[in-house]
Length: 312
Image (cartoon, rainbow, N blue to C red; front, side):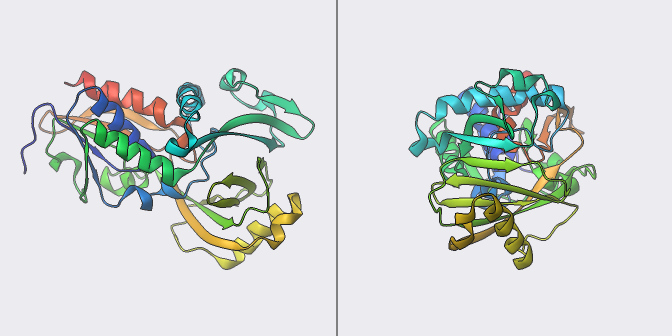
């Protein structure tokens, strides 16, 4: 096994959880490397719709704190949208109610009840831009990213190993409690829509939402449990467009630009904890963020970085 320095940290995974955690560690002065099987642009994070909102993630009391912490960061980053990919955008969660949400909802600025749901001005993140910005920020702090496949966390040569592998943790840890919930999106030319929209659907594996991003209007979506296929399904895509067009008819004629599929790493509860490797070195887990990895990224990264630093 390679030998790593006694103060080195290796973060395994280059999605939003891995890069955000790595940034905080590097900026705290720790020598930090990111090891990833694939570049950030090919992770599940890269295809996320990326509206800040807790979705398919638990436990709720902890999620609220992580999400609010992250919201504060995004509100600052939204001052530089071209650089960070973060904008504050108005929209409506149709069918949502304040009394059905956790205590965190009362601390979201401007979140209010309207006739058909809840309205708010929330962070909407252009993920390709944001992931590139995180990687550049990590590099400025002295961090390095390496494309390396990890098959054994105990074999990673570092004093502290941080596991941010998302769905990969299912086989790597191994942890069968983390499983995929498949999400399919359609990207169309934006016919002039400037607000986001989501709807609470009664069909468990389907939803209706659209998010205006700089590269087009993102239409969704699906939530197919234990589905592993990364190939877009044409029939599903047509259903997504039809559901969104029922809300905004101008979407029906919009030219399709791309199809995207991502596998959300869902777990009953986020795994964020410190463990010891067989030789006494430290392993920190930070995975299982479901459909809200973007929403809790900074809150979870702060806690993971503290766990890693406490092991120094």
